[in-house]
Length: 325
Ligand code: PEP
Ligand code: MG
Image 1 (tube, rainbow, N blue to C red):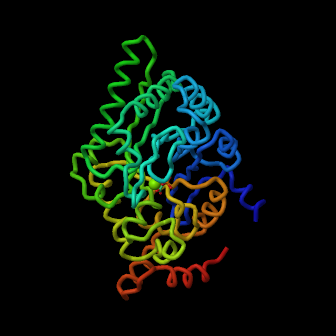
Image 2 (cartoon, rainbow, N blue to C red):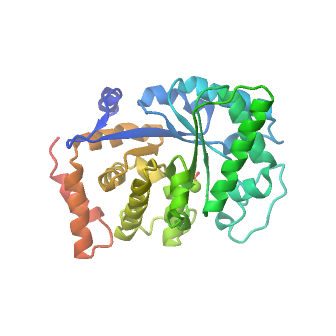
Image 3 (tube, rainbow, N blue to C red):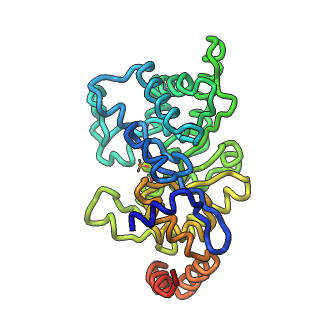
């Protein structure tokens, strides 16, 4: 199988019905970057920046981060890397930060909430990214945005830093994309103005699913209880797709489910055209997409919904077992 996937490396994820799906990889370490070439990924759809903060015993300095981000961009060559600003707080406590004792850390003071309340680190990280880009295109996204004003405020920090860098005589990117992760159900119901302002939306399916079903992703007892292919959840994803389509906002999906072939297939059938996953998943996902007709998958999902099934999975498994190679 490994060999078969390797032979697909330079082929597009082109379905039988003629739709191409962009497959990106998730990364978080410099050591992940060689996989960009090896897996044939179209880019890095999610670069988690937490690790560089977690492995140190003191706050990293701007220059250190800038060097690291520049190496990531160098390694990615011309491929796009979506840098996610720090998603930390509560459960992922930095050794050099005062711990917060929170009863529900996943719903606590984390990610962009920390970034907006204590913007020093957010601004330093943005400066490091701008210096690293040194005029190259730059993509930044914010984790865990729950309402429009959070996005506006975080975006304003980026624009302010761009302005500041320019006034200091540094080159700034002329292609700058600023996006939001959609990982709380509330953001799916944000005003149109949010979808118009953001350069893209990336669904963080791990968090979105846990908050949709109110089922803790860390709790073994419940974390697999609800299927991503549950038709209520798929209906919700369809609403997000429709909102983005209405404003022409590029949409991608970067939770773990994007790396599971059947889930990836369904996301594509619902209308997603960009998925981001761990590098090892790209081969298996591409292999299945290349055998599939999205219209047929869509019909199977719709029939399962019409019957009142909880999940589209059983019907899909039946359907896929009839697919020829
Ligand atoms: C997600 O929530 O789906 C996501 C990609 O972010 P993380 O897994 O880092 O929370
Ligand atoms: Mg998340």
